[in-house]
Amino acid sequence: MIEGLAEILRYSEAGLTGLILVFVRVAAAVSLLPGFGEQNIPSRVRLMGALGFTLVVWPMVQPGLPPIDPSLGALGVLVVIEAGIGFLIGISVRLMVMALQLAGSIAAQSTSISQIAGVGITPDPMPAIGNILVMAGLTLALVNGLHIKASLAIAHSYEILPLGTVPVAGDIAEWGIARASAAFAFAFTLAAPFVVAALAYNLALGAINRAMPALMVAFIGAPAITGGTLLLLLLAGPAILSVWNVRLDEVLFDPLAMP
Image (cartoon, rainbow, N blue to C red; front, side, top):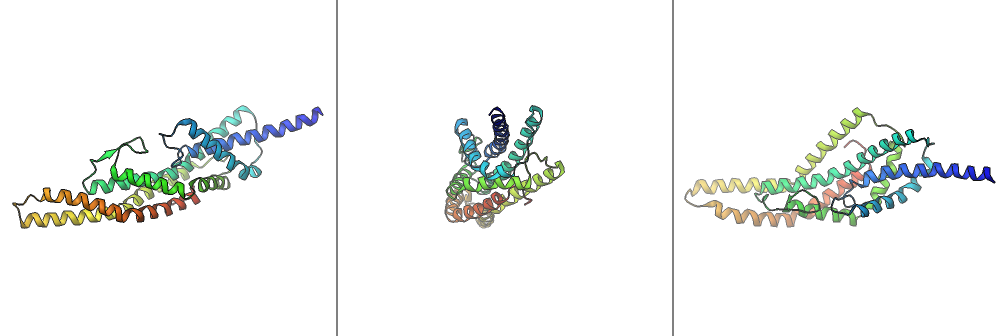
């Protein structure tokens, strides 16, 4: 009986060690996940969210986990590796939210309403357009099953980077540069309607000013650009969010892939 109990404890120890390491990767990814990892969410709620994701991911990856050395030194190294992989998954998705923030900033700067700022779900002040886009984008992502897609993405990461696999530094650097570049390019693409409208507005304002130098066109143009921006946000906002949500799904499908 004692030998049987010892055998059960040995298997329990291995399973618990694997569960802890899965939690480390999941918690690191969830800490940067849109909606679940925002800084204005209480830390206890975020912790419970990470535990919930772990309970979903653990049964999917447990059969494929390699044997784990339960020694303290080896476990500490594995914790660092798994945390790093989790942060890579989280930052790839977080860059999509940053792209939406940057798109709002570009749109506000182009239309001369960037001074209208406020604190939204992110700790840093953003223009009002950025707040609207980010809030709407996160709501759309959560409604469309962000938690399910994120769970599948984390589970899929074990096929690309199995437990304890150390990523190559050169590959990570190349991947990070490509992801950041793609996020900046995508942000400008989302803000393109506002940039084009602002260019047309400024050209028209310059032509009117040349034709009638005595007319204070700035007093006439300021309300026009503000109203036009709000109207453009109403018309282009759904399309912008739809395109952003499609790209977010692509990133969640394989967050560790090259863009």
